[in-house]
Length: 310
Image (cartoon, rainbow, N blue to C red; front, side, top):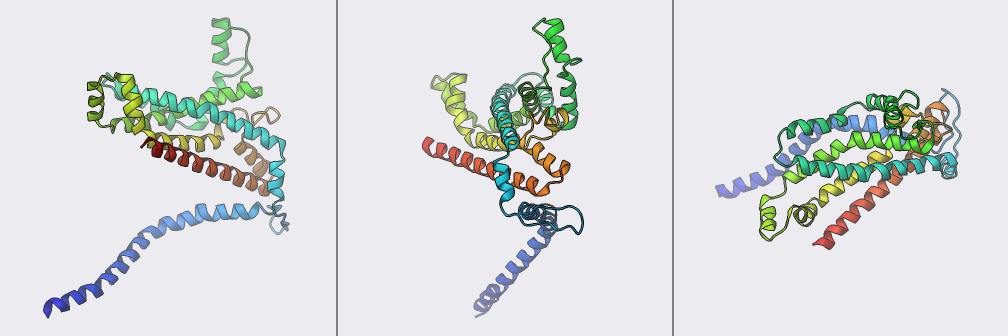
């Protein structure tokens, strides 16, 4: 009888404890949720609303509703198309290079070599350095008249003439891409290095017993195990490539004649130079849609590769 009463009390008490647990959890989450709503969710939804209006920043001015006109204008904007091409060029130039160099450095620094901790720190140092600082350094290095790069190529090596690195479209995009690779390769290296250290040593020893050399071990054992990490790094680098802004803004400002505009600098120019916040918001949402679609496609592609591999 006593056991039955105790069980009934426990059953009645369990839902109360669960409710108290949920209340406690939400109380701890509430400050972060409030900050998220105030600083992220509300501005994002407000930007979506602004994109449907010819938004006026003057207090009291009427902002007429224009519907999808801003999005239609973006799809027909030749400068935005050029900015999209420049962004894709930057993406294609930086993402594979960062992944390949980062993987190579990770493999080398995963070995028992002297001073590897120092080398890891040195390769990661550009990642934590300010974008503004490194952009100004590269702007000096690739300056047409007084830059160190032209000085070495022309005055020391006698290779042709001074290149206008930042004054024309494609040399400027190459320079921006080199900066992106140099600054981001340490991040890829660190992620790949952590993944390599998690590879079971027994698998590599078994492959060595079967006669596989270091190269065969890497491609047949290590690389398949790194597929989830490669997928993560690819998605993050693609998102980062689409979000290139500071280096372009500091080094070229999108010029000359909008030749080096990328999507974010063009969006910034429309919103904060011309005060066309409706059009700028529409560009931002189109970019977000493209990034979301590409990220989803990449995740599904890597998931399909893993299913085929199994």
